[in-house]
Length: 78
Image (cartoon, rainbow, N blue to C red):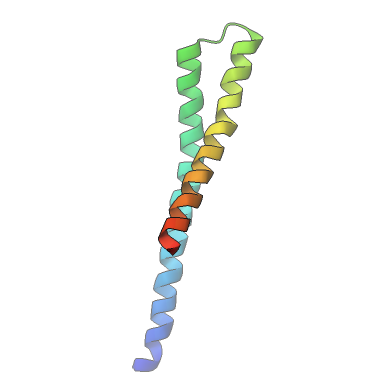
């Protein structure tokens, strides 16, 4: 029975990592979309410049989410 414990532990760790990656994926999709929608509502783009600002919000929000996840992983590793 003891010979199966490392395999079970590895499987649980892999499943936990997969759940964490799915959560990060969905957060990485949803946060920039919400930021873009909020920017569109706040700015009320009626010109090309307004639309350019709204479109530029999505990559900026995605980069912010990536940095937040990077800092979270770095903090967890310490």
